[in-house]
Amino acid sequence: MSLEQPRQPDAGVTPEGDLDYDELADLLGERVLDREEHINAEGFVVRPDEVEDTLSTLKQEAGFDHLSCVTAQDYQDRYESIYHLKKYDDPTQELSVVVPTTRDDPTSESAAGVFDTADWQEREAFDLVGVDYEGHPDPRRILLPETWQGHPLSQDYNQDKPQIVPLREHANPTEERTNVPQESDTMFINIGPHHPATHGVLHIKTTLDGEQVADIDPDVGYLHRCEEQMCQQSTYRHQIMPYPDRWDYISAGILNEWAYARAAEDMADLAVPEYAQVIRTMSAEMCRIAAHLLAVGTFALDIYGDFTAIFMYAIRDREVIQNLLEDLTGQRLMFNYLRLGGVAWDLPEPREEYFESVRDFLDEWPSRLEEYHNLLTSNELFQMRVVDTGILPPEEAKSYGATGPVARGSGVDYDLRRDDPYGYYDQLDWDVVTDEGCDNFARASVRLQEMEESARIIEQCVDLLEDWPEDERDIQSNVPRTLKPEPDTEIYRAVEGAKGELGIYMRSDGTDKPARFKIRSPCFCNLQTLPVMAEGEYIPDMIAALGSLDIVLGEVDR
Image (tube, rainbow, N blue to C red; front, side):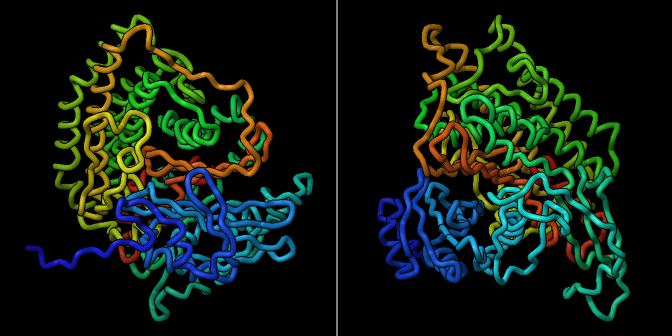
C-alpha cells in the first residue's frame, strides 16, 4: 500500500476528466467579467488589475501549471492580452484568460509573479504591441533597441517614421544588478553576439564572481524579421505556408509548417485525408531526426571541440535524411511541402525505390546510434563536462514554460504527439522519452533516444504507405480557393516541434488574412531557463547549458 497521499482532483474537472468551465467560472467568482468562445478553449475576461490573483488561483486550485503563450493585440477600441493556459499532465485541458485595457492607458498587471515564462513573453508583448505590464520585474524591450520609437504591431504605428539609434555612453553594466554580491571581485564580459558557441547572433551579458557565473542576461533580437507581421499581411490559403520553414530553419521545416496547418485547418474546419496524415507524420519525423542530429553534433563541438568525429558523423547522417526529404519535397531546407488540407504532392515515383532508400537508412540507423553512444554518452570527457551541470529542476522547467527535450530531460513527461494527438501518431506504436537527470547529459540523452523512436515511427509509416490501396491515395481534401473564417474566430493550436511546443494563435476579421498571428516559439521559452542553469557554474558549463537547449535564433527572434 502506498504511503503517498492521493492527488486531489483539480477544481473544474468532471469525473470523466473533462473541463467544466462553469465550475471554473464559479471558482473565480466576480473576477470573471465575461466569457468568450474560442475554438480551442473558452476565454474568461478579467480586469487588468486582477491578473496575478486570477492566474494564481487557476494554477494552484485548478491545475493550470503551463502558461503556454501570452498574446497581445490591438483593437479599434482597446488593447488586449491573452494568457493561454494548459496543464502539463493533460494539455487538452485549455483555458484562456483575456485581459482588455483601454487604448488611452494600456496597462495591465504582470503575471511574472505566477509564471516565470511571463517575464520574456510580456516584454515581447510590450515591445511589439505596446501593452505595459505593471509590476513586471524587468520592463524593457526585448527584440528592438531600447531607443526604438513606437510598437510595430500596434495600429497607430508609423512605419515611415525614421528611427535614430544614438551611440550611448558606456556605463558600468553591473551597478544596477541586485543579485550580484556586493563584496566580491566581479567582472563583466560579453559573450557573443558573433561567436560559434552562441549558436547564432545571441549576446549573453555575463557577470562573473571569480570564475563562477553570478548573473547572465541573454540579449536577443538581432535576427528579428517581423515574421508575425508578414503573416498578418498574407492570405491563409496560399501565402503564409512558405514562412514557417524560415523560423526553425535547422531542417525542421515540415514540423513548423504543421503548426500553421493544424491551426488554420481547425479554424476553417478542414479535414485532412488519412493518407496525407501518414505522409505528414513520416516526413515530420525525418525532420526531427535531422534537427536532433545537428543538435547532438554541435553540442559535441561545444563541449570538447569534436569537429572531426561526432560533428562530421552527424552531418553525414543528416545528409542521408536531407536526401530523402529532397526526394519527397523537392527542397533541402525550405520545404514548403504541406498544404492546408494535405500535402503538395504524393510520394516520388517509382515508389518502391523511395521506400527502399528509406528502409536502407532505417536498417543502418541502430548501428549509427550505437556509434553516437560510444563516442558521446560513453565518453568520459563528455560525462565530466555535462553530468551534474546545467541543472534545471522540473518545477523550474514548468514555470518557465520549457517543453520538448529540455523539459523531458528534467523528467517532465509532456509530448503533444501523445498528449494532444494529431496526424497519425495515436495510431502508431512509440514511446515518449524522459530522463530524470535534469542536467546537460540528460538533455543530450533524450535527443539520442528520441531519434530511435522517430525511426520506429517512420518504419511504421512506410509499412502503411506500401500497402495503401492506390485508389485511396488522397493527398488533399477539397479546400476553398479563398478562406475567410468568421470574424473574431480565435484559435491556439500547437504541435511537438523539434525543440518543443510550437504554437500558433490566430484571430480572423472576416477577410482572407489573419487580423492577428502569434508564434509561440519553443526556443524563445526554453532560452529563458539559461540563467537558472548557469548560475554558480563556470563559463564552460554555461556554454554547455546553452548548447543543451538547442536554440535557433531565427525562431527565438522570429
